[in-house]
Amino acid sequence: MNDQANGTASSKVMSISRRMMIGGSLAMLAACNGRFSSLFTSTDTHVLGYPTVQAVIRFGETLSAQTNGRLGVKMYAGGQLGNERDTLEITTFGGLDFNRVNLAPLNSIEPLTKVPALPFLFESTEHMRTAMDGDIGDEILASLEPHGLIGLCFYDSGSRSFYNTRGPINSPEDMVGLKLRVPGSDLYIGMIDSLGADAVPMPLDEVYQSLAQGVIDGAENNWPSFENGKHFEVARYYSLTRHLLAPEMFVMSKISWDKLSADDQALVRDTAKQSVIYMRELWDAQVAKSMEIVLASGVEVNEVDPAPFTEKMMGMWGDFIDTPQQQDLVDRILSLRKGTN
Image 1 (cartoon, rainbow, N blue to C red):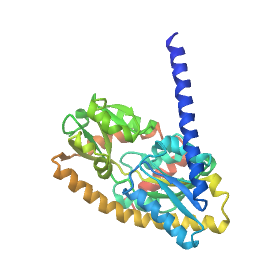
Image 2: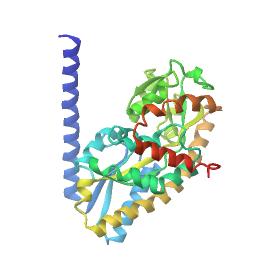
Image 3: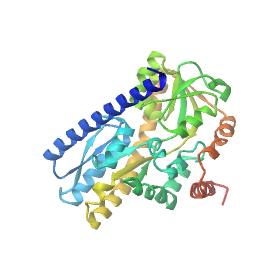
């Protein structure tokens, strides 16, 4: 059998396995819904105590209080139902009601979601929150509806920096040849390629083992994920490039949304927006806690001059921003930077 045939056969096996996994997840959810008829289902790859998980739990509690128990949410945290790409697919055809998801798997679905995922787009957390809480964020959220999803709100994901097992990163030259994990997104791959490193797309739950076994040299993420995933135990160098301040999204299946009355739709949307305030309180506290844990463990943390990284990474924006609507969003976000008004 030639290489092409081998590749086709392998793809078919992966496709069958993927369908079996999704089918099993749907069967589990159907059984759960039989026991909890008034509850929506929601999923998150992060563990139970993570700020996004707790925010969605609070969202469900508020829904229940507002409807005298008629509506509520059953949370499946810690990747119980699979990785984000798979659970997002389940959500689009109604097998899950809600999902907290990174922008990466959405990038291949809707081009507007690439905008807030651009490296060095946001100059600060305040800048990101201002942009995503207003008309710009609403426009990106609304863009998901034709794809079977209702965008409800944005959650913080902090600033992302590079960590690795080899040594401190002080310049892009230090990254040449490093194998770095990224979420499955062409934009993230392009970002790593622009620095001379080798991007390795990989689900988050495989990162720890891959670092420990030397399959990858490092990754990039925020303080809480670096700490919660125990990646700091094996990757002992954390270099603060702060190249991304991309938020995450809380979405609902359009199939589930369309079953709600107009009043319940308004309640769900308003309650989701309210959960952002709570999430950010938890997030800021979690960042401080994770920093303390990581620093106490002896991880070598170094500040980085962002200028050479900014120059290289902003150079790849044009490869992914190729529509007038995307460019308009970029321009409006940039106009919100301090000193530009």
